[in-house]
Length: 61
Image 1 (cartoon, rainbow, N blue to C red):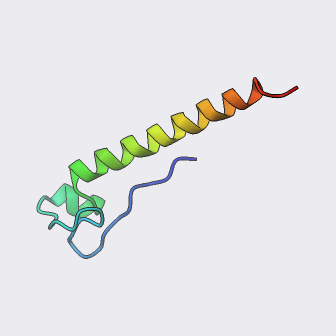
Image 2: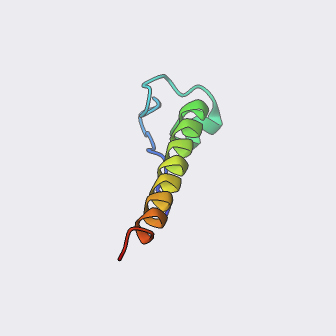
Image 3: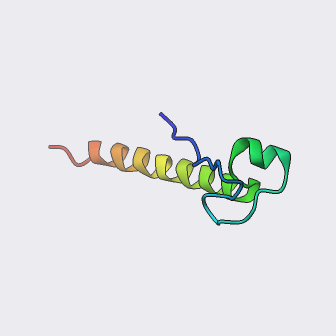
C-alpha cells in the first residue's frame, strides 16, 4: 500500500514550510515540488525494499 504525501491545512507546505500560493497546492495541501520529491522517495524506497526481498530468497539454504 502506498502512503500519501503529508497534507497541510495551514496554507504552508508541511515539507518545506513555504506558503502554498496556488489553488491546486492549497487543495492538495502540499507544494508541487515537494509532492514530486516525496512521491519519488516513496517509489525509490518501495523499489529498494522489493530488491532486498528478492535478494533474500537467494541466500536461503
